[in-house]
Image 1: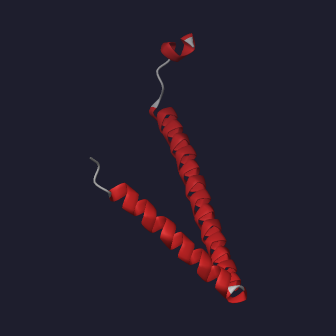
Image 2: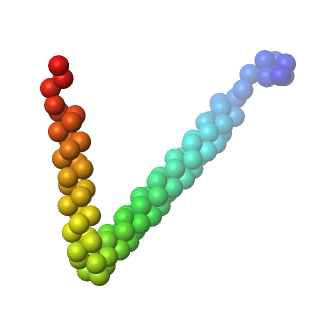
Length: 88
């Protein structure tokens, strides 16, 4: 540690260190972007699969699907009514 204070760094050493830090940061950002893109792609594929599964289930069980949608509508409507009701 004491040797750092004894000898001032040359311009070339400083530029090399800056270049190394820049490459490390650039690599980390690129890795993060690749990870985010991969996660977005996997999420999109998962959502598409679930939509396809839902379409298949609706075609296979139309009455049950209609009943589930009706019940969900009643539930959501009731919750909205309870939440927006004026409080005394």
